[in-house]
Image 1 (cartoon, rainbow, N blue to C red):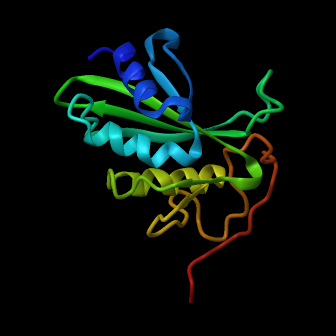
Image 2 (image 1 turned 90 degrees about the vertical axis):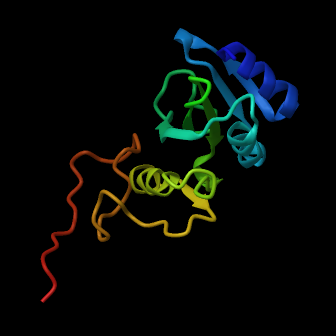
Length: 165
C-alpha cells in the first residue's frame, strides 16, 4: 500500500477526526484530532493492511514563532510509524494547545513510546495521559523549564547540583 492509499484508509475509517492530510516532499502525513489519536494509532498498528509495528520516532514541534502559525495550537506531537511487513511508513500528528498540553500515551501500543514520551515531556513540557513513569529523561530533576520551547531563555541560569552527601 502506498502513502496515498494509507491516508485514504485513515480518512475513510476516521472521517472528520482526520483534520487534514498531505504528502509534502513525499512524507505522507495525517493530522488527527486529539480525541481520536489513540484510536488512530491503535488502528495503524492493528490493521492487517497497515501493520505499523514500529514506532520509529515520537517528537514534538513548537510553532510559537513560526510565521503563519501564531494563532493556532502551539505544539504538534509527531509520530513516525513504519511497517516491517509492508515496508511503508506514515506520519501522524496531533495539535496541542499550550494551556492544555496533554495527549494520551502510546506506551501500551509500542513500549518504546515510554522513552520517547519522557523525552518530549522533558524538552517541551507536553504531558502524556496514562504514562506509567513520566519524569525527566535528559535533564536533571532540578532543571527548571523545558529547553526546546521557543520561549526558553538561552541565557537562563540553572541551579547547581552536586552529589548528595
